Length: 112
Length: 457
Image (tube, rainbow over all chains, first blue to last red; front, side):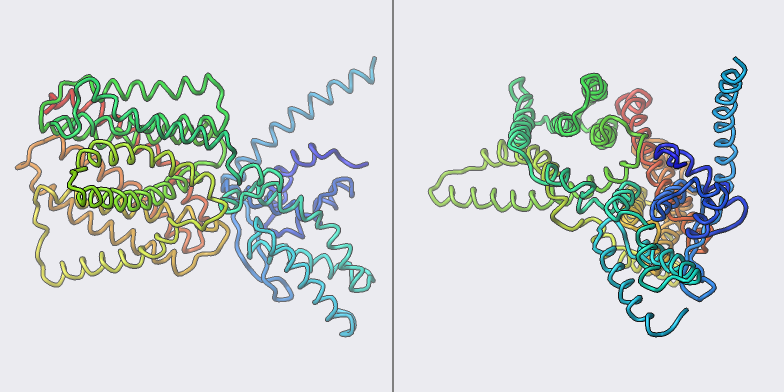
């Protein structure tokens, strides 16, 4: 099953923030984590993650810092900020509303 | 890594991919590095899973996604990078790059309309050069800025309702510029003349941004537009000066004094029309030339820093205090305006993602030294404020000093955070952008309340 483009785009922000809330990370690891968590259903085009990260950085939700990878190459690490955590909480409430609404509808569809 | 045999062709392929990515104008150096790091991570994992170097490369590139789509996403996020090129989509660039015949006609007729507008009051007995200069000074912005806003509204295809909202501030400005009975040599009248354009420029900004000031990230584009327009205007004015001088000289050769033509028509009409033509050039040529304002910023930031430090050092060395004269406060206001301008244009041209560099340190030094100089001046003035009493000029100058001081203090704090890697540059840019309306709000105070409070003095 592949998710629609709009849904992937809409879920990008909370997913990235939630993953960074687990700990600092970098682009490739974030994508790997998303694929892992979604059991492969959520496939991002790798490059598209970076404009999303830069947008979050511009809004001050994440902070970036150049560091080194295990092999010594330069690598940009991202960290969630206080504002980012607040935004994550906000997004979480919104998704829960959507989720519970849909759940209610589908439960009804099952019982009738 | 596997055998050294397939290593160098892989490096070659990556180098080619990097070159191809670099040619995208929306993707800058550090982004390319970041994406390359991602590509290499992916290749490393795939190679470990047993794929040969070139196979791993192909899959990693495929996963990265279509580069056209990718650079379009980058362009959306980093619209400031495309200020020069405007290539969000190739076909859209063609449309925006070349001015159409319709646009040429609109611009020319608006330029003529602005030129006619400044001659209109003459029909009602207001003579330029006949003692009515204060009237012309107070209304200077009103002669041309409505036309400029109209051009931008036309260019952005604004809805009629939005246009009506844009007309309102201009109408209000016309009322406040002319309803008060300012006497000759009135300070509050002169303050109105100075502050009205600051308010109206914000209205022009709203028109520039398609009727929405707060939505979207276009406000920095408006700052860039303002800077470029100023530079174009100065260039046009220089050309106009040459034209005027030549006209005078040629007519003098046949013993006809063309002074009335130059003073009454050429200079005022040209000065008005040039604003519209300049705006048109900025809109049309932004894809062709380099931005000048940031270049000038880079040039003058070190020079002003040196001057300020030299001033401070001289003050400490000689121990001579600031001599509080009438113009001192205004001089220090101008200094702060200049420093804020340098910070603003440096921010407008800076790549947000780039790490702090030497120039950022220099900016902080400039801001801090300006703050110290201004604090010294303010202390000197405060010590003698009781002697002065409150005049409109002093209150206005003090208010402006305070507003600029707040801006620069917070900017210095944000710069320091950024340099110590505690905050991102984007925050500083947002602070500067968010502060823009404050200038106009203060100017509104000056225009609306000062004449009443100070009895048109």
